[in-house]
Image (tube, rainbow, N blue to C red; front, side):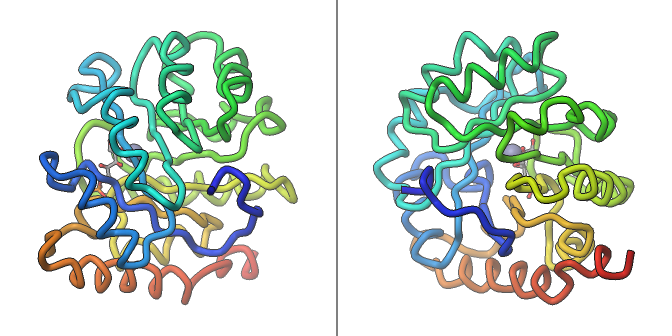
Length: 240
Ligand code: DX5
Ligand code: ZN
């Protein structure tokens, strides 16, 4: 399973099931994996940390048998610590908590590691890259929100590209993924891959126009994002 995967900076496409058919998560997860996605991104929202509610650990547990790749669980909840074990037991491979979710980020990240998951930390658009400077040796992934979290289908915030460049420099040789979440399309993907990102979450840009019955569209959409990202990968770094 993905938890033991070898680290690399190849472009990975992680469709967000926030844009899938909520009455058919199992089939939707099988369809996007059949169509070539790398990870499955699961957006958990609590109606408190973000102004929207999705689902909790029971739904993640129900989805788990349908995900053969990596179940990448993005927790947009506060408080978060009390729920980490439940999401780990539900089968999350990666658990990502927000810097802004509580006062004790280091404790939260230790709890995720202790629960047996890979450790992610997410930054809202207004939170600077420096917020993770002192936890870099605790994490496997940093998620740069390129929209204000809560809803799919929002526009990419271009000022976040500079944050990705800064994080890439801070990370150096550490085996830490840079994940982009929000407004990723074939047009915006090259901007962030050139800046150093390797994991691209995409909800509307993967699911638009397709369905479980017409799933080749998902494949077309995934390929379009991947090709655009790959063609620009590392561009900003080699230019720097
Ligand atoms: C936003 C979520 C994202 C989002 C991505 O709060 O974390 O995963 O749904 O959706 P798109 O790709 O449609 O911006
Ligand atoms: Zn997300």
